[in-house]
Length: 115
Length: 115
Figure 1 (cartoon, rainbow over the protein chains, first blue to last red):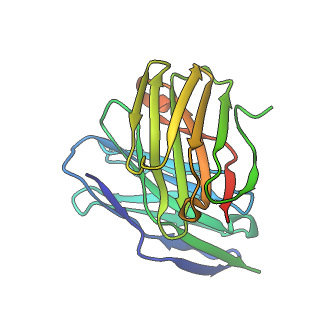
Figure 2 (cartoon, each protein chain N blue to C red; figure 1 turned 90 degrees about the horizontal axis):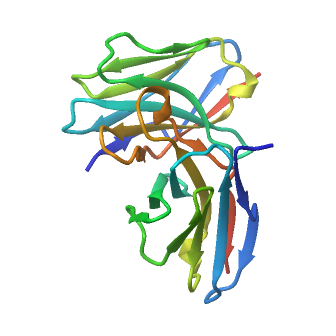
């Protein structure tokens, strides 16, 4: 079974600064997908960014980018120019190349952006 | 209107009561999922369904049952609620296939408290 570990339960960053959230995972699969979800106080789960394991290029979505290290099984999220609206729980998630599109989540990192 | 809806949004119930959480979607997706979220544990899969006649247990199905009444509706039941089922519950949907269809779309969540 796959496991996903987020080693930072809480983090804080000053507005306009850059912060990196860590995620590691364990799998024996070669093809899979990785995701970062954001959960603001509204509770809604919002997809921030996705990475296909077969792609060597790191995914980028505006201020959000990932550092995907397949050999190390590491998938960190970098948030540049942090904004107050980035304050949220962030979950890393793994989806294997199985038939069900099922997600395995990490325990989450609570990010606080300070003015 | 939201693509994935959940009712109720919040519920307080007593130990031993039967309760049903409902999920509806207008995305036309075949696959539906129920997760529960607990602090520090992220989201864990309770049940998932590939279509109306295909229902499967997830990681933590004990104490829960589900019903897929139609392609668009997937209900989660707690036959006899207990306090450690107090959690945030999410419904999600996804399409089968490749590429962006791997994404899961989440409902707004149901906060359940069992006293």
